[in-house]
Length: 377
Image (cartoon, rainbow, N blue to C red; front, top):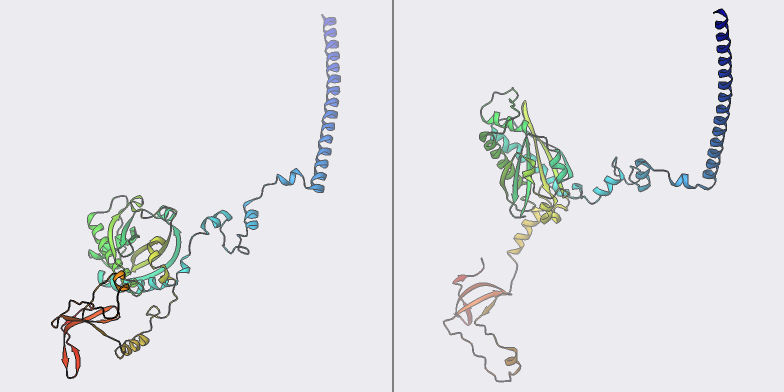
């Protein structure tokens, strides 16, 4: 039994030695092959780098530029295009949008609106109201609709003489503040807000009254520039139903802040450029004082001098229309028959403008016409 065990141990030792020798041979072969492969890869990398450095081949052409490098090449950085932090694509898209700063008179109109609204809303609410203009920006209509914080009320109004529309947005803070003030809320306390429910008929009615006051002031603010009537059209709570222009159309947005002691909110006035197009030439004028460029002293002097201006007045007894063919046949002695009689009325004209009408007579040795009817309205 002992001899058999000794033989088995000898066989195990021999097998272990053989496996160890085989493992050593395999490791040496794999290491040598791997080292050779790495060396070949390194040589290929050096050759590629040399080619790129020498001729700027395919490696350079395959390089992808980042956004900052693209903006720098296009000249849209602050040092190049002067468009601020906008990316190159945004600057190209917005390059066609007209800035409100190119319409100097528009800011003057909004300044007048702020002053008049302060007085009108004080009378409307019987409270101390302060109105301030936060900013005026140019924006695309679609971007503005997507940025309106809800809940809010959107009032659509129409400029009658310009035949186009505008938009007024009243945020929830101002809505509840107006309701609280008009219904006798206690001063010094913030208006109670109840979110998550639709606005009631009373709230919509009170806000509509406030919007009517704002539209009346806006019409008055534009009066020295151009007479226009802004008429309230409808009140919406969903921005999708307040679409008055295409999403890509440019518009001017004025943000107003209305404070009533501890209460208040924001009111935003949005006018598309298409609405202001009929008065664009007037908005391009430079502001020259409170009278929008008008000189009252010169106007009064001109009006005074006009009363002393001499004009030539013609007294027309009758008129006949004759074909040109008959006129060409006239000879010396041809008679032209008129339909007037001694009792016919004579029309007095200044150029082509008829002024008066009356019978003809004689005063002393001169032929006279008595004015009985005024033709110029």
